[in-house]
Image 1 (cartoon, rainbow, N blue to C red):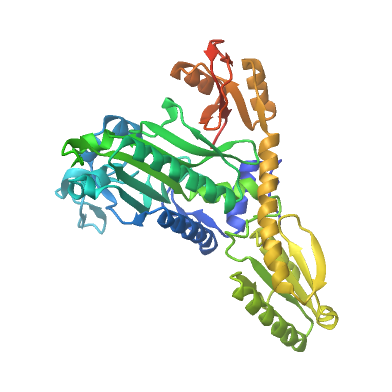
Image 2 (tube, one colour; image 1 turned 120 degrees about the horizontal axis):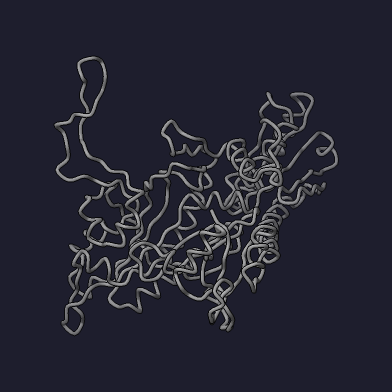
Length: 490
């Protein structure tokens, strides 16, 4: 394990890139813009998947799988949707390669597809074409389906986990008999995301609605959760969309109501992606490496033996294995690292870099005294405790660490959320303090665009818990009935 990261203060972007590599989470692939998620990074994603999947099923959803390829004609059926994704689409035009006779493999020009296929950037179109065959009557509704998949949105300026041409995600697609049911579903899934990000990832979020400029292409309303990273930039951590009847009308998906009338179906879609791993890194980690919330850590506890002879190692191993068994019975993931090719100090640095929440060190003196050294990753505190009751102690400590990580992130967000009452004050806060800025906006797309063009700050959301407050737009001075949340963002 090579030591040392560029500090966050010195170069936050470089710190992030180095940390992803040194913590063995991911690396750039031979395909430009795409990443290889390494086993340790994927283990975090698997823990995220497992928690979210359970939450989806508890709210009545089932998993399905739809094609990776979407006929180009499907996209042209919903105008705003195709416009929103047109510049990001990867297009398949041919279906065969051939040898050119000189040892080179080329595209067979005679194998052109009759209709080009789009590698899915999102699945609304293919799914609503499918739902047309599933829905005839109100008895067929609601449909509550989720898909775990990969998607492609062509990106040339990439950053591992945060923005890559291909990424992993889940996308929920639901169909309802009424607008009310669809809106309730949209809000319910936003709450599920907020619950997961706050209680599993230990990242506080603000729930809100996107402005018309920032809505998902084809949506009536987009709801979102916004989080603040340690460099003062915002990160959209999840979105839930009320699609109205737009896709039902585009794909002619109608149903017979209880009253015998024919009506278009109401729709939602919602999703989170491997971008959440980027959020996890940037919200909590320090200049020594990752800090992982225990609920998502692939290894929650590591035990490192400190010994001078094979006899000492044998005795320590016996105790370590006994403790491991006790911890595993409590559902705690534990690793006993008895590699004899690495010194304890190297192992300490390795697990610190990987963000393992709790480290136990056992030496020969600990065997004699009946004690164990325990170190927390979140605040680097160490203490020596009795061997008796160690499993209960660690179980409670992991809960304490989870809470502490969230509390620290919440304190940071609260200290970096400020109000601006003039454009000058707004720009000064952006340049000197960063963070969330709560300010009045006149509600027009023109003002929103001008602020974005001049400052690179966007309206992250209109918070759902907003209180009415009459004021004046920071840019135009026109009347405003509430503040909105601005930030520069990833």
